[in-house]
Length: 253
Image (tube, one colour):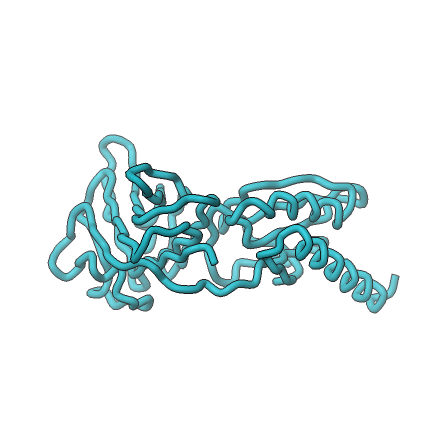
C-alpha cells in the first residue's frame, strides 16, 4: 500500500470516527491530536476496551464517553492485525508535550474552552510563614517566583482548600507546581470536591511531580460543589510540605 493511499485511508477513518462521536457525544468534539500515544506515567486512564478493528475499539470508548465528563481524550493502538485497544483519558493528566512516537497509535483530544476560573479563596491547613500565604494559590499568577507560592508547614496530611465563586458542577481542577525548586513535594495527592457537606473524590496523583508541572484533574459527572480540597496523605510518621503556585477550577460547560 502506497503512502498516499494510507493517508487517504486514515483521513477517511478519522472522519468516520468524528461523525460517530458527534452522533453519540453531542457536547463533545474530538480531533486528532497526534500520531502516537501518551507517555507512560503522565496520565491515569478511566476506561479501556479491546476491538477487532480501529473503528470498533474506538466506538466502545466513545460509548463510554457519552456519560462521563472526564473523557477529554481517546487513544487507540493497533496491537496486531486483529486486535486494537482504546483507552479513555483521564482521571488526571500532566499537561505539555508528553507524546511518544509509536506506530499504530492515534490520540484524539476533545476541543473545548476552559471557560471561567471559579476558584475564589484559599485556605491552608497551616502556613509555612508570612511570605507563603494561602492567597497566593488564587492570585492569578501561574509563573511564580519563590515568594509567590502558597505553602504549608511540614505535616502528615497538609491540605489546601479552595472556595468557589458559586455552587456548580466541577469539571477540571488544574494545579500549577512551583517553578523554582522542590517540585517533587507534590506526591500522594488527593483532590476532593465538597457539596452539601459531602466529600467526593476527584482524583489521586501518586507522583512525584517535577518543577514546572501542570497537573489536570477531571472530576466525575454530576458532582455539584462549593469547595475543592487538595491533600497530601502520608503514612504515619511521614511528613511533607504542600506547596503550589496556583490552583484553577472550571465548571462543566
